[in-house]
Image (cartoon, rainbow, N blue to C red; front, side, top):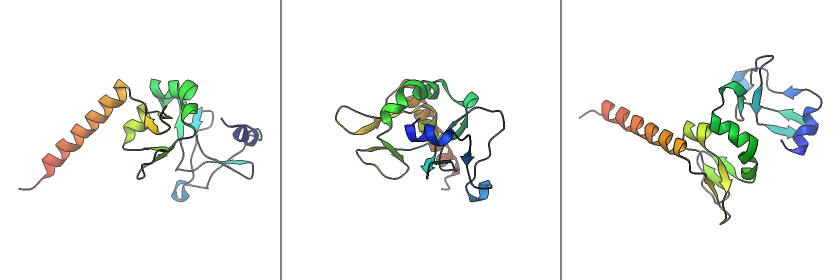
Length: 138
C-alpha cells in the first residue's frame, strides 16, 4: 500500500458509488479483501474498474505477488488495448490469476513468465479455437 493510501484508510472509510449500475462495489461485512482504487482528496475510493477480490479466492501466485512481487511493478501500467514500454497488455483472466507485470532490466514492462500462466493461456487459446471451429458455418 502506498503511504497516501495508508493515510486515507486510517479513517476506516472506503468510498464507492451506491450500486453496481454506476460502478459501485458491494463488499461482504467481515470478509478480507484485496482492493485497488484511487485516493482523491485523501479519501479512499474504489469502483468496478479496480480490484475487489476476497482474499480467500486469490490464487497462490496472486498471494505471492501481493506479498513480494507486485510492488516491483508499481511503475508499470496494465491496459486492455495499449501496448507501451511502460505497461503490459491485459489479454484475459489468466493475467489476473497468474500474471505479474514487472519492469525488466531493459526498462520495459513485461509479464513475468511462469508455467502456470503459460498453461492457462494455452488452455484459454485452445478453448477459444475449439469454440470458433464448432460455430463456423460452411
